[in-house]
Length: 338
Image (tube, rainbow, N blue to C red; front, side):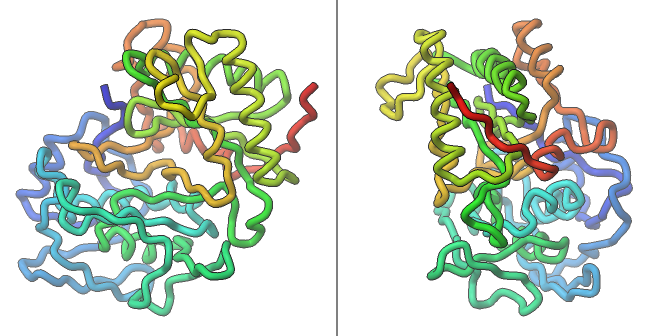
């Protein structure tokens, strides 16, 4: 089963005015209570034109083809995608800020061709911030709401970022563990491994937060400081190997896919300096518009206790804030592993 949540109408927040058909479709997708106010700004006025000009925080944007269906099975349109990102902006932007963005674009929807775009396009507005993590690559930086809406208007369904910012590309601010179940293992197996991994991290004095991958897996993130990508990659691999040694029938760190059936793959390689991971709150290109959503550790434990992945329900930002906020907080030094 794919874990995530469909973007609900976010009542009272940064508001896009959708056509009645879009509103109906979005309402049918909503499975959680709406978010309360995160802002109060009208982003997209009603229009039957293929182009709509709007202003956000003093920036003028032209939004195009808002009626185009990007998730055919769900009838979810580009207007819904732009709407979601505009409204989730206050909690996703802190995780995107100053990080070189990789856009995964689906101009004709998830059933059409897609492509990764790491280089900030030449047609980007002059006010879009850019930065270089690599000498030969200038990337877009999503540092504000207008840029986020502009990115969404490019049908950038998935937003991926590295673990370091452009301000200090050599030193990541986060260490990540990507837990990927090999069938017949599933989400509950990932919950079990995630809790074991969290216990190890707690013993080492490290804070960890968790989110769904937007599919069947989980992502753990650990805010760090004064570490290189080689440090975090080797550290993550060492902890994965320890879990593999403890439970060889349930856990693997082997990159060979033939070794993964029935096991949870602890992917430590996502800490490589040149790799990017899907950002928390990003949409995923699944048949339905699923989000890589943060969850609490209590929710992970509850899902395991109930033996029911459906109970891993996402508490929305207006009730408990951002469960992933610690990952952009103060990092900790990695301890020496004996």
